[in-house]
Length: 116
Image 1 (cartoon, rainbow, N blue to C red):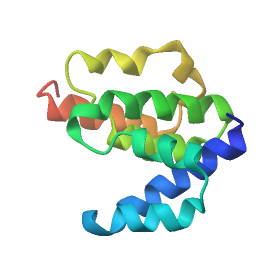
Image 2 (spheres, rainbow, N blue to C red):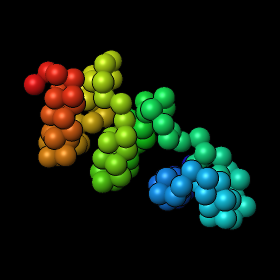
Image 3 (cartoon, rainbow, N blue to C red):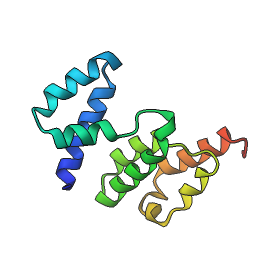
Image 4 (tube, helix red, strand yellow):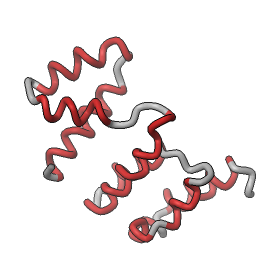
């Protein structure tokens, strides 16, 4: 999948989440305009606490694409509790480590886990 197509998938996903759950399927069917591949990709993205591990991976992909704003949107959705707290030390996050949003995120995780 190209970065442009992936961006379209995540835009549709975000737009769908802004709607009531009962409106999402109709919205996506219309917005995908018959593109079943995009529809399947959007429907496969994490939207609940059981799938929050994937949110970290999606954020990491955005870091690789250089889109840090989108990366932090996904990092905010990720599960950073044990054992995932170690994700902060993933070397693929080096480009964002000095970003104030990453510093705040790390501090928030520590507070939520009672480490600060």
